[in-house]
Image (cartoon, rainbow, N blue to C red; front, side, top):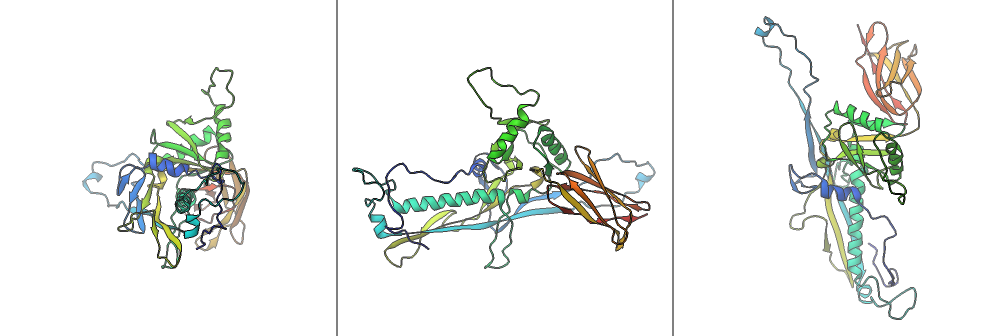
Length: 407
């Protein structure tokens, strides 16, 4: 713990401002437009939990709809039961902690000035302890906003290993849509594909979040769309698109600098909350003085919080990249390598196809120069069948080992 002394933290006059971006836009949006109802919700975007790990959602799948074909005769015997199973998604809270240490002399000598020697100048920080506490609390808020977006999950296997909460980028896995550029077609096609996975377009609650640099892309992509119009004024220049009308309804455009450029998050705001684990008798994100060992005020700022993004399939993540990748792997029936199988990748939205053929001895195949996108994978080989799968290619090489079945 480094102490703030009179010669290490100097006093100055003049307007005080931060030299870093202190915006926490997505976190602030969660606290104003986030989850309002549900287990443990005690305020907009705030959920109280009582354990390190907490449930996000519990899902089930009844299968796709189809037309039954049941005769009168067969209806006299009940069909075999097939139970509907459930699963659960979870996340965890993590510790946020920092400290302050200000000497008594530093707190007292607020009239000792550095910098310009100007008559009548005033210290722009009249209370050093309050300044240090508020600064560290602001840093924790920024850390929580970063974790909300980019947090990587880690389970604390023992008391020496930190619990780390999973953020939105890592948490949204079902609906990941890749493409070479953001456009109205990609946005609408992505929503269409996500609906098949249980996504529900919640009108009035959907927001598209991106990096500030990607606002230019949105302006360019959607200002040329049918129906877009500029005001008749001859004194206004430029444009800023804040809403997009999709095939399914309106989407609000917003930004946060912690989102990596090229990543767009279509979020259902009503699913989002910050999970808080209170300390008995103290609450959460509080300052408390520590025991003194001399003439200094020592204290800590402490909080326990995690990210509640609800059912992750109610959000969509768009990944934009111009890089191509290689999809490779093996084609096998059990442990037997299959020679001459044709592996086809068909981009779900554009219909573009890429193919590769498996080799003789190993069953290996490789398909290069695959553009970013969502691909349906099929395999053609006489005497074998393959159920097919769907993969997301987003500029990084992908390994897909294929298991076929003999017929």
